[in-house]
Image 1 (cartoon, rainbow, N blue to C red):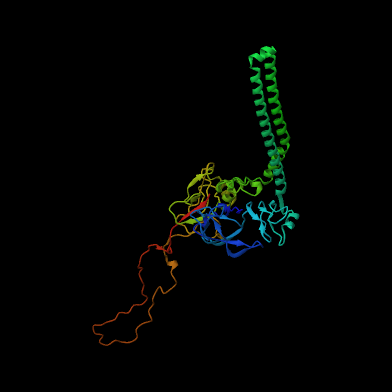
Image 2 (image 1 turned 90 degrees about the vertical axis):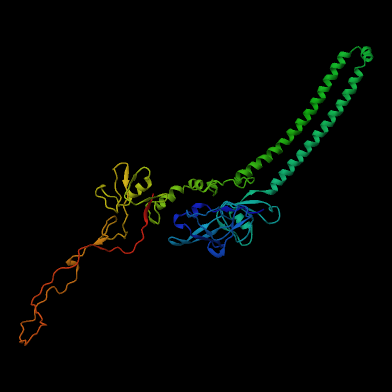
Length: 449
């Protein structure tokens, strides 16, 4: 019997930070640790087709198609926005594993066959917990309670043979009864022919009485035959009820519909009770957990509009009801201005005070880490700056003479020189502001709701 595979659920990999990353799936050793061997990935539960390993995650950070595994794997996410990441063990729980194997890791609700010889040859067992099977024999794990007997094939075979024997005997009895009834009907026909002879009836003179008795006789024969059949069926009913009770008991223990491999395994049996990823998250109580995990996260997107479920940090007022999860987070984390008028571009504001609150405005802003001198939400700096005399380095501001001339100049001619004492300098240049922004690329700051 081919083992069933189980699909890797979206919530085990789905993450906006994984968009476009490659995921390598590795086999898990008997010690529960990742090996260097890439695992085989399947396209369907029966394993008739395989898919490539690694897989590339889509624009939502999830697998773009269902991927099935027959054994546990560990996923290595490579190329995510924050670097590489290795998951824990993604187990293939609650599936049919075929014949029992020694030194193999099994998980709760896995179903295995005995696989050996003797009276237990075809018995079916259910794993009661996660465990590493014994290196020698299944009997050790049965004794330890790791494996629970759910189908005793020898008992089922005995009951089935008994039921089949009873059914065969009932069929033989029914055939014999039908033959006897046919013979009785033939004899009755002959008697009716004799009684119909007018001369005979006249001589005897009791035609009406004989006809009446013949009719009663036929009814008695028919009733006797039916009674025999009723007794036969009544005798078989106990065996039939026993077989039905055993089948019901087996079904209740397994809680698995083997005639329909797509039946969802309930949460209390290690499954999700769901056929879609969204329904599985709801059934396991993960929907709110995943949403709360990232609420309040700030992210820079190279986009013109904010993706769902994010809001652009542009100072807008939004509904406290619509974004209740974010409003709860804002109130709990200490960056909420006392009034809307006192709010800085880096703070959340109380909005209208009852139904709305406002977002920080990070447009045209560079973000730095807070410190002892710069509290969260505080703002500072400017795009331009105007230089003043106080911004210039110190230097020579006046020039003074070196003293009076002592030599007499003879025949100076026409190329005369002028000498000045204590000269002054006039101001020059302009007072325009200087743009001191470094090279930049603009993006859209958003917050997770």
